[in-house]
Image (cartoon, rainbow, N blue to C red; front, side, top):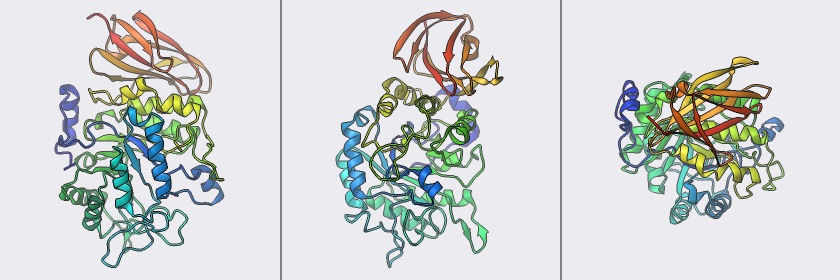
Length: 425
């Protein structure tokens, strides 16, 4: 069962005691690492702007991605999930009401695909919606059925297919003119999954306000804290970062804040050439990965990993930053303070997260338009007057010992990510 059993008001106590607040069934005890189809076969941004489709997937693509994940080094670093977004379902349910896959895109069926992924040590996830229909037809001529009215039936189908992860979205949720209740629906679907006896990671995608209400941590393993994340800095990534700043207290083993997919490296292109069309700079992608990691967020990549660019390799295969995301202490980080820069006191930001042992991860983040020197005062991380050793996790370089503070030159929209280790008490 993947239901979190302890009310949210106890999360603060957990942060002090380090005790898990989720049932210890092996599901979601660490943030999930993996890949999702949403923007891989077609560029979300370009297709949205041109009125074309973006939710495209098929079994050949999924098998290719699985093989690529193993050969390109991602699997060896802990990436496991291969998740289908709103692209796999048929336009009609079967005669008995059961949900089924698009036979043109998945002629061998979902169970066959799941078996293939499991044989390689990978995990499989898919998408549904709480409403009557899903959010996108993905190029099909008719809408795709959602799970409303079929929560128990769909949960059993997913379990029989060997599904390991379900994302439930929030579209077409007015029934007979009345909006369905998120807490009621999410709880019902969670119980239906649990009743199958198969541990299935449950991700809630929207339907509620931010920060996430307390019930989400009782019924799910992760919950979206923002709208969709797009491959843009000004009106997407930078906005998501601000939303993530105060929500660390809601996360812990078994339940994680979800800022949505990583767009690292850019989405696919209109010509389906397996090339990349990045909407952000390499610096911005590094900042995205740093913030997602220090906040213990799921790292689900929505970029075509069959054709890894140099920046994708540098980011997605960064062992030291992945180790922060997967740290055994499992305490999510967040923004802990600021350094007053010339652009304003909230531009130069300090983010931190305690790690296993006598270490902390720190991100010095420059949200402004100009480059800045950012000074970390060690009292901001509870180590005033302490001597520490500092390592740069992007440069993979030990910077030496420091007492009192540390200064780093950080470019616009960039960050410095550090491992800081206490050397004396």
